[in-house]
Length: 137
Image (cartoon, rainbow, N blue to C red; front, top):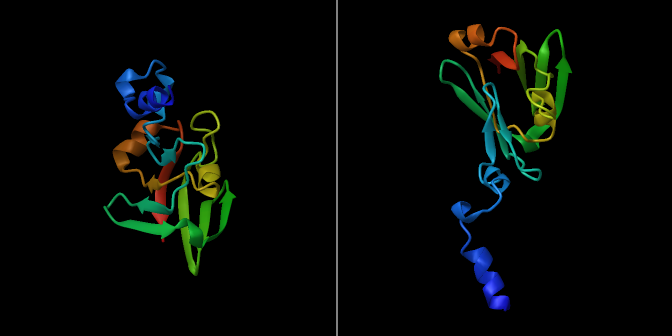
């Protein structure tokens, strides 16, 4: 009996899942345009990847994040060791979807990457959702 119960879980595949909500747990990362979001409640990113529109990428360890500030007029400022990183854009502390905010996600280590918007993306967004216009380090 215990063996059949064990086999049930060992041999289970996503196509066997009766509940489709289980499939969403198999995709731990959600792309929200300007940033990624770890979907699992207990998931935490080890590093934050900052992607500029020109192709430059900087990855910083969340363990080194000393302080994070949000000011609606200037954006988000991250203090990582002796380095200061500034994120400027629109709606940086607005809910992208229920219970998902960029600043909140950074403070909880749920954001694995942030993408600076290129010109077409910025024009397409037109005031809707979070838009990171500039990342400065």
